Image (cartoon, rainbow, N blue to C red):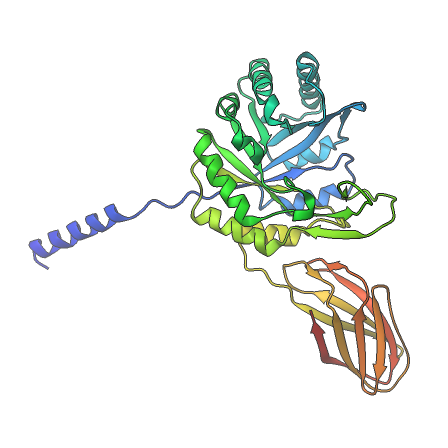
Length: 397
C-alpha cells in the first residue's frame, strides 16, 4: 500500500469519526416509596427494584389540616442495607390554609437529624405541596428560606403541577430549587382518567421552556377506584378500602401507554429533562399497582407481553386448574377459557369465574373483574375427570 493510499484512508477515518454523534444520555430512573407503614414486604420489593432504579424518594413526613404532623414509619435497617441514595419527601397538604414557615423548617430539620441518628444520609429533600396558583409567590418565598436553612450539600426539589404553567410566578419559584418533579398523573378531574400520555408530553415540553434547571417527570404505575356519589365529585379509593356502597369504577394507568411515552422521552427528551420517577414501589399483594415485573420492564423499555396459559395439576384423579401469566405484562383476567377433557363426574369454578360443562369441554367464563400479575398464577377451578388434555386449552381475552 502506497503512502498516498494510507494517508487517504487515515483522513477518511478521521472525517468519519468527526461526524459521529455523541451517544444520547440515558434518562435516570428513580422510584417513589410511598407507604406510610413499612412492612417485611418492603425488603423483597426493594431488592427486586435495585437494578432498575437509581434513587429512592421516600415519603417521610406529612402535614394535614386538623390532623397535624405525622411521620411515615420507615425501616431504617432496610434502607441502609439497600444502599441507594435517598431523598426525603415532605408532603404538605394543599388544603393547609397557610404554611407556618418556622414550624415546617423545624420539623424538616428534626426529621433529618433523626434520620442521621439512624444511620441514614439523605442526599436531598423534596417538598410535595399542591399550592394553588395564587399562593405560588408565598410558596416561592418559603422555598428560598428553606434553601438557606438546609445544608448546601443537600439538594432541594419540589413536586410541581401542570396548572402552575399558567402562573407568572413559576419561573421565579423554579429558581429557588435545584430541580423539580412535574406530576403528570391524577392532576385532572378523575372522571377524565388517571393519565393521558399525549397531554403529559405537551406539559413536559411546556415545562422545559420555563425551567432552566433539571426536571423529572413523575409517571404512574398504579390505579384507583372511583366511588360514585349522588351529588358532588366521586370519592377516590386507593389501597385503603372505603366502607361505602355504590358503584366502583376502576382506573389503572395502562403500562403500554406509559411505556410508549417513556420511549418517546428517551429518544427525544425535552430540554432539561433529567429522568423519570415512578409512582410507586409496589409491594406483594398491592391491589392497585403494577407488579414489579411489569414496572421494571416498562422502565427498561422492554417489549411487553402477557402470555396466559392454563396449568393443570393432578392428584388421584382430581385436577387443579390454574391460570398462569408467563409474560412480563400484568393482564386482566381473560373473559373466557376452554379446556378439553374426558368424562368428568365432578367440576366447579372458583371465585371470579363460572363453569359450563359440555361433552369433552369445560368453559370458564369471567363474572367479575380482576388482574393477574406478570409471573403469577391463580386457581380458577377443579375437576374430577378420566383425563384432561394439558395442551387442549384456549384463552380468550
